[in-house]
Amino acid sequence: MATQWTAGTTSGQVLTAATLNTIGAEWVDYTPTLAQSATVTKTIVIARYCQLQKTIIGQVVLNATSAGTANNAVQIGLPIAARTAGAVLGSGYIYDASTNTIYGGPFYAFSGTTMAMFYQTGNPWGISPNLALATSDQISLIFSYEIA
Image 1 (spheres, rainbow, N blue to C red):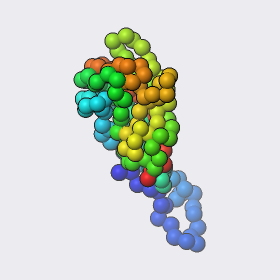
Image 2: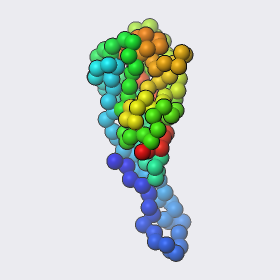
Image 3: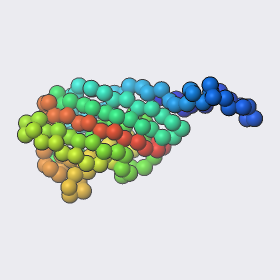
């Protein structure tokens, strides 16, 4: 888990330039889940996040190596539970390799622990359009949210 930056200072202590140069949280890898009704196997190209106080900032790129189930939301696991389900977290795309089509849109907190992409009708991708993930499809996104 990424940790909050504290600078190691105490109340009344002078905050020096050397200390300020250490601002930032360390980015860490995580292993997101990928599901579309059932677990979809994947290759993780990148899945990293950092935590600054109660804010998570991250990025994910996944390549599906098995199929999902059509008419179900594609869900990607969050590194730490979100404070509010339904909130928009970021943006990205789902690439359908079989048709060479990129579907772009906002990603939102599908639940407290997963995110999904809204598409056209306000339904999550997988329901709209009614498609299943397949081998070689790719999901790529950036996100930021408040933790619970």
